[in-house]
Image (tube, rainbow, N blue to C red; front, side, top):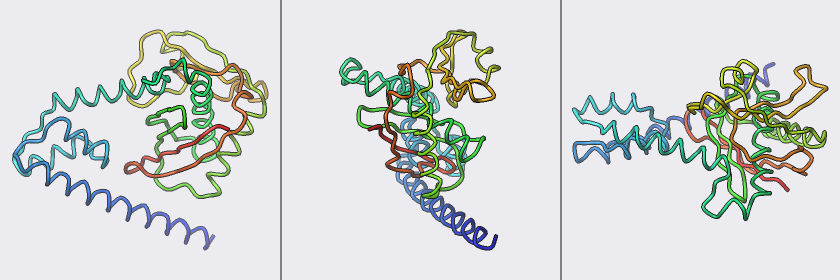
Length: 251
């Protein structure tokens, strides 16, 4: 118990130090961009994306200096970023989906398994906060207050590969949004969905729910988890206060 307490204390201290460093950098950036007496929407979004400054926090800082923010441009930038993230998540790359369809499907399906593995291994309260896929790797953002330990990373990786080895079928269904949510389907934070959505389910008859993962998603995906072969986490890092990021590949 004493060792665990010491470890947790060290992790919290490290996380607090990292947060303070990010906050300090963000404040320096804020002071730099307010020299002209106005904050553009793009600058406000930069503070949010790079330093984790919610727009409300930036507004409070701006009010102290009697500086205005272009909120209309900020909202446009925020929406554009959301649309881009969803498109990237669906595998719609400038390089052309046709050239990378197999690897995109593999990485996209791996993202679904990773999402549920984090919830099962680390915390059931974990939610997806964003994702990005390129032909080389997947990137998955999620809420969690601290750095994952090496053992936790290995356990998550092991869980993903366990699901791959079970050769579970991946099925698509089209259902009303309310039915999808009530049926346990996960959704991306902040995303706006139509009334009728696609739900991808990784079925598992041995699970008490009869499925391992269920998410609202536009695709594309594999038909079976065995097509993934092997999953490997290559990096775990902080991207904002309370938000972690995993980068991974399939081999």
